[in-house]
Length: 88
Image (cartoon, rainbow, N blue to C red):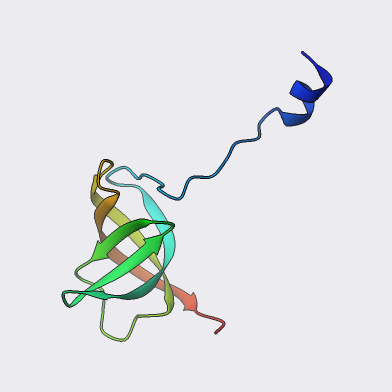
Protein backbone atom coordinates (compact mmCIF):
# COMPACT_ATOMS: atom_id res chain seq x y z
CA UNK A 1 0.00 0.00 0.00
CA UNK A 2 1.31 3.46 -0.87
CA UNK A 3 2.08 6.06 1.76
CA UNK A 4 -0.93 8.11 0.60
CA UNK A 5 -3.15 5.00 0.75
CA UNK A 6 -2.03 4.35 4.32
CA UNK A 7 -2.70 7.97 5.25
CA UNK A 8 -6.21 7.96 3.74
CA UNK A 9 -7.20 4.50 4.99
CA UNK A 10 -10.60 4.63 6.66
CA UNK A 11 -11.47 8.08 5.36
CA UNK A 12 -14.76 8.57 3.58
CA UNK A 13 -16.76 11.51 2.32
CA UNK A 14 -20.05 12.38 3.97
CA UNK A 15 -23.09 12.70 1.78
CA UNK A 16 -25.80 15.35 1.96
CA UNK A 17 -28.33 12.54 1.46
CA UNK A 18 -27.79 10.03 4.28
CA UNK A 19 -29.98 6.94 4.23
CA UNK A 20 -31.49 5.04 7.13
CA UNK A 21 -32.97 1.61 7.79
CA UNK A 22 -36.25 0.81 9.53
CA UNK A 23 -35.56 0.21 13.23
CA UNK A 24 -32.45 2.39 13.24
CA UNK A 25 -32.29 4.89 16.10
CA UNK A 26 -30.79 8.31 15.60
CA UNK A 27 -30.44 11.63 17.34
CA UNK A 28 -31.45 14.75 15.41
CA UNK A 29 -32.92 18.22 15.79
CA UNK A 30 -36.56 18.76 14.89
CA UNK A 31 -36.28 21.75 12.56
CA UNK A 32 -39.86 22.62 11.73
CA UNK A 33 -43.19 21.39 10.42
CA UNK A 34 -44.42 20.24 7.00
CA UNK A 35 -48.18 19.95 6.73
CA UNK A 36 -48.49 20.04 10.52
CA UNK A 37 -46.01 17.17 11.03
CA UNK A 38 -42.66 17.71 12.81
CA UNK A 39 -39.62 17.19 10.59
CA UNK A 40 -35.96 16.44 11.27
CA UNK A 41 -33.57 17.39 8.48
CA UNK A 42 -30.26 15.59 8.28
CA UNK A 43 -28.39 17.08 5.36
CA UNK A 44 -30.94 17.10 2.54
CA UNK A 45 -32.75 14.06 3.97
CA UNK A 46 -36.10 14.69 5.65
CA UNK A 47 -37.52 12.49 8.41
CA UNK A 48 -41.18 13.13 9.33
CA UNK A 49 -42.11 12.51 12.99
CA UNK A 50 -45.93 12.40 13.23
CA UNK A 51 -46.05 11.57 16.95
CA UNK A 52 -43.63 14.28 18.13
CA UNK A 53 -45.08 16.17 21.10
CA UNK A 54 -45.95 19.84 20.59
CA UNK A 55 -43.20 22.34 21.27
CA UNK A 56 -40.30 20.11 20.21
CA UNK A 57 -39.02 22.28 17.33
CA UNK A 58 -35.35 23.20 17.90
CA UNK A 59 -35.01 20.29 20.35
CA UNK A 60 -32.57 17.43 19.96
CA UNK A 61 -34.56 14.19 20.02
CA UNK A 62 -33.99 10.46 19.69
CA UNK A 63 -35.97 8.89 16.87
CA UNK A 64 -36.61 5.34 15.65
CA UNK A 65 -36.96 5.09 11.86
CA UNK A 66 -40.16 3.29 10.79
CA UNK A 67 -39.81 3.68 7.01
CA UNK A 68 -37.39 5.24 4.55
CA UNK A 69 -37.34 5.82 0.78
CA UNK A 70 -33.68 5.99 -0.31
CA UNK A 71 -34.63 7.29 -3.77
CA UNK A 72 -36.53 10.29 -2.42
CA UNK A 73 -34.38 10.69 0.74
CA UNK A 74 -37.54 10.95 2.84
CA UNK A 75 -38.55 8.82 5.79
CA UNK A 76 -40.75 8.57 8.82
CA UNK A 77 -39.80 7.91 12.42
CA UNK A 78 -41.38 7.61 15.82
CA UNK A 79 -40.47 9.91 18.67
CA UNK A 80 -38.49 8.15 21.43
CA UNK A 81 -37.37 10.93 23.78
CA UNK A 82 -36.12 14.49 24.05
CA UNK A 83 -32.35 14.55 24.42
CA UNK A 84 -31.60 18.29 24.67
CA UNK A 85 -32.21 21.81 23.42
CA UNK A 86 -30.62 23.92 20.74
CA UNK A 87 -27.79 26.21 21.78
CA UNK A 88 -29.27 29.01 19.66
